[in-house]
Length: 355
Image 1 (cartoon, rainbow, N blue to C red):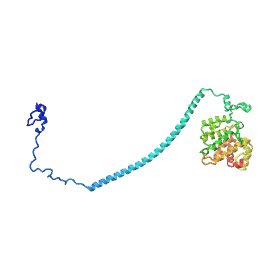
Image 2: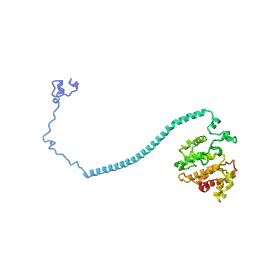
Image 3: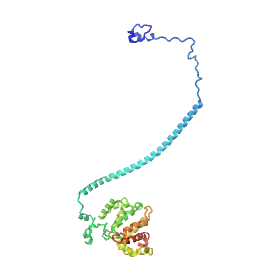
């Protein structure tokens, strides 16, 4: 049975199976004694000749490691400084974008309801029939024949635009000029930022905004014009009014009587221009005087990048508003320079001509 269990057999046979497991010391061979004269640990000498410590090399190694760590620390410090600068820049950009986003969000929230109502109105207008003539006359967008005594066809005439100067709504107070001219100039000159805006009168305004202002002004409503945040739409209204006048402030035919060509303008220019203005009616004289005073103020401001020449070139085509269908093309080519020089002289010699 002992061989079956695979247990080590001892020379001293245990009395029982239990004793074979519990009395292990009886089965272990004792270590043979060391021979006489064998050196012990206390008496045996330890050789130290094989261990050599080089202190100088170890110091150089530590010194090199220290320099490497210092170099690495400097690089990390530079990287940290650069990251701090980038972080400050990103933080500034984030604050700026956050402010812009909040402003856009506020603007969006304020106009959401208006856009929704406008959307419903557009759908309504698409489904509705075109507005009849009577409704347009009641809204003062067009005038009836009775307003003109049946002399002209009023179907294409509006209350302010695309009509004759004497039919335009005039200012109640002195001087007697078209109200639209007074309102536009008042809005521009009341805002210093508008007067200093680059490209004043040369930059085109938003077409849709100008058309909406056109409808309001035809209804004698100037509230939206006074609330404009951009000067270019206000300038666009003034230019549109002058451009669409069926009888211009000064006709080329009248101009040719006093200033037939550029050569004639070189002598007695002020006198001839004063004679030209004196031949006009009171409304045209007052309107020209107010316009030239305003344009002189515009040309005196350097920030808007507009001078007398550019204003003269622009407003000569508006004040002397003649089409090629009204005059001979060859004559129109010859007289193109005369209106420009005439407007420039009115601005630069305003006091001598108008006062």
